[in-house]
Image 1 (cartoon, rainbow, N blue to C red):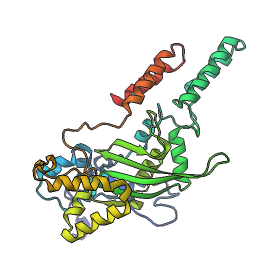
Image 2 (spheres, helix red, strand yellow):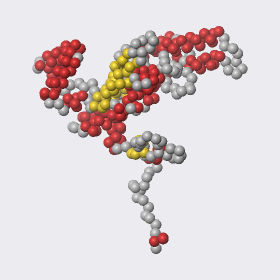
Image 3 (spheres, rainbow, N blue to C red):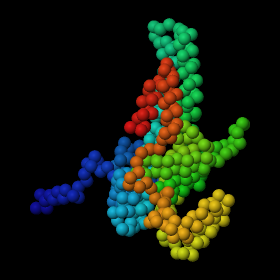
Length: 348
């Protein structure tokens, strides 16, 4: 009878797995206004669309494999695949950027070691008034912290300053060519300083920043605020970043006339800087016995690291040595041990 008929159970492959079995998800695009489930108590995680298989594979490859290994394994990599690998190779977590632009990434509301010292020195319940020695020690600590910029919270930290630069629209001309990110960061004029624009360049590989360059000339173990601003721009606004394949792939698509035009326009635009180097390279290429002609291919700074390169976050080793010497010389400085441990955690 029709009343007693039951629908057959869904095939196991057609039934939805539990949420814990679906890690490769991203929020579905939506228009303006409240999102799905707003005000209804429904979890936003139930309204998502799955990532494509291309993105799932590209994320795994971008994090674990050097791009040179991918090129060696496959004779020709389709352009859409290259684009997704290059896209996912940039760091994805802001906490990592924070870690390398401060000793520790503390959330708002946490007090710094200097503040903790001041609090304990001023005395709690049942303690007496702070002594002259404790007051002097606290003042010395605060001065040391302020000088090094090592710890503490507030706008003076490179990470906080970088966020402010990003949120005030100071990051412009962002371009990603392969594994190389560049842009300009403009600092507004102040009563004592004019407006200044810094050129910033970042190289990355397997979700780690491997080198940084900034026109501000920062010499510290931390990334400067301009590097932070450009990095966070790439993490928060990836769809607004112009993405290009490694320059060697672009050159491969050009014919002889196009290559000659590119070189001549490049020299014309920067003749005072590159003309001597261009002529030197031309002389070496035209000489059959030169060393450059004994090497197959040519270097490409935008093609990512090689298989043999160390895959680690960039730190200025000379500045790390100087900072360690400074901390070791401050035997009685409160928090120096914690700062050294935090520093070493970046390289271990």
